[in-house]
Length: 274
Image (tube, one colour):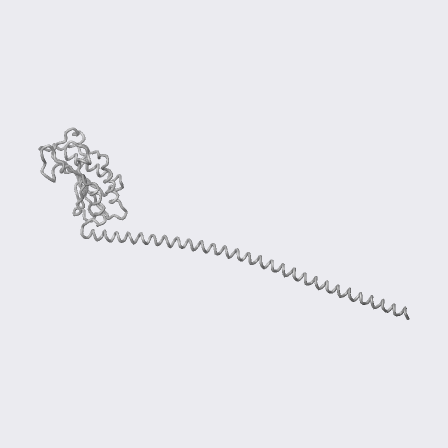
């Protein structure tokens, strides 16, 4: 009987051990399944994160492109605004110029600029706004008997040229007229046979200086009156007031035909007598 009991106990123990082994195996297999599921979920999460990162990169690139497009459009807008302001200013300037043309005068801003040039050179320049005329003293502009501009006289001429040639300036006709007193030409007679020649040659020198400083050559005409249109009565020994060069600035629609003196002809004028 003892042997039977012992055998039964051994059998029960073996059965219990077998049951525990099977239970452990099932738990291990279940844990493996959970682990595989977690690994798969982690892999899916990593893949999802990579896709999100790629989408984010793409969205950032699109955002950068949109910002660049906005910057470009803003630049175009600023440029159009600048052009609009420039055109508005130009239209305002033209409107003032047209108003001046209707009454046959120079625009007020141009008169102011020309008056400033004259006031800064009171010894040899005067300005008459009614006629649009600048008068240069020849004694301070040219040496005696010469048609070569003195050093320093080019500065005011350049300033006048800048006003005439300004893109916003009213279209002008420019007439340069030279004058002398009644003292005959002596030491420079070969170059200037008469006072008439000298006056024209001086007008040409002033004209050339204006053109060199930017005035359209087709705007400028020259003439010389010699001693025949004095400002005051000529005195013995010479009269400085009558030795001058005058620049007339006239709105283009107000100009009339002026006959130019031909200095290229072969016939010389007789010198005027006192």
